[in-house]
Length: 129
Length: 346
Image 1: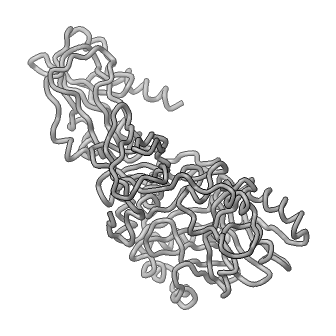
Image 2 (image 1 turned 60 degrees about the vertical axis):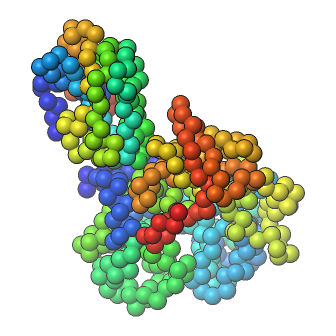
Image 3 (image 1 turned 180 degrees about the vertical axis):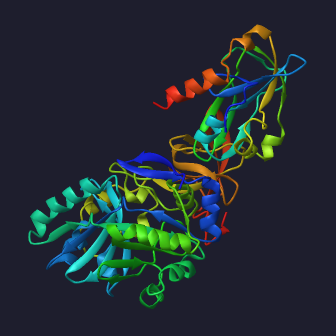
């Protein structure tokens, strides 16, 4: 599965989608779900929580390991995906559909500064070596 | 086969072939196969092999009186710590077969040779690196094994749990590491690929190390290096049942075990809150701290389970707190195994 071209990416393997209303939707990439394997538990951030860029804000746990999820940019949490509480395996089945949380960025320009799909793929390839 | 490979004690091993959860369920409900050729087979041959093993092992090989009987035992150091845990098979009075862990095999063999030099110098200690080992496990393991190798049924069809049959170049044991029925088959390495293919055609699915670990944890079976090691007494690792302290027999580590009664014990934990317990997390109890020795998610029970070493005074049914990342979560102390023959027990 290739990384969608309409998304932005972080070095810590989150994907970011800018919505029409200026909020962003955050999930984990195909590469991240593949590394972690079967998901069994998701701990989402609280709605209203203010986050700094790169702040730890959620946890996804697979059978194998726990992984921190970081805020891609500074902002406020506006929603989390409650479906994942009972069906964390949706992240494995559809990593770009099973979003974790939404945020309102403090500064929209911060999102533009994240990696595009090509740069992210290069980052993944470099980590593999 | 699309396997995700990892380095495991110098061996390239499949962590999973797709989904670890699906592989786990495959073994609990049907049949799966594991390439466990990394485990080392060691044959001990010669006069006096039984006497040597009576001294070398914490369990008593005198429990093995008929050909093919198997015994699980620890091999201890003089301080009473566990050098390794192993299975010993009685073949005849001049030959016993041991199966030891991969990561400890070289150390084990060096220890056995050192002890043999002092106590049984004529004994031959033969590592069988020419043998591969494939485990077939699950409620349909037997049925599918006979389908793959029809000739085997006559020889191994009547094997009771924890017994084996030696067929010359092939060796079939009704043993395993999953809590399900099944077999561990040793055979010449060059025949392993053919055997694997035959099992695959019979519908036995390959299972990786990831599911091997959740299966054994649910079955309440110890993992060397996690639940015990050279610094841990078997009496504090849930293995008192494998240590024969009643007979007059002396064995390496016995004096140390008798001199130092256990103050901690291995118990099962079932997490009451959401999250996953992991190895080395601290367990807080009203009688002092303990530690998770093996923690994971149980695919069969759909919650987190663990083995933990905690103070003796803690009772089954007590609620303890586990330090999971930055939180203290509640866990219930239970007897293990957690799952046996496909059924949850906790």
